[in-house]
Image (cartoon, one colour):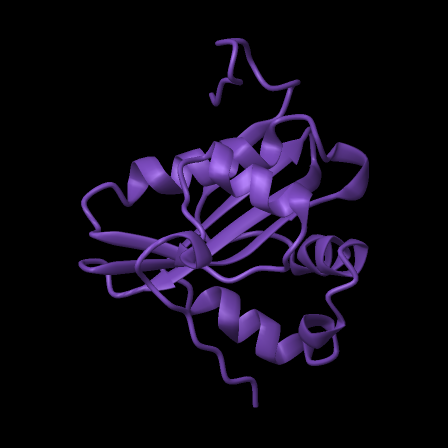
Length: 146
């Protein structure tokens, strides 16, 4: 069971590590986030998830309410590719719990990185989990989208 910042349980949410789950529920999660680049090609999304290094899901009873997935080489880098929580379940500690579980399961990997949208809310969220923005350090990030 995951715990919140105060040491208590996170709602009645339970978490599962693994890639075996009902894909219709996964699609609902991506639709809720309005991530149409993912949902426009369902087979591509299935392959992406199946090829992920790590997938952790959050459930409220039988309802999929959150998902995090990483890609990487299992040694030097783990890249958080997706972190989604249904809108109605956001700000309940689920996203933090998912990231913390990734951090725990990949603690022997040298570096965890992610690329995400720029907003005060997003910056505050990831900084609260120990991430540093590249614009505040001695690193630089580059991106090419095809």
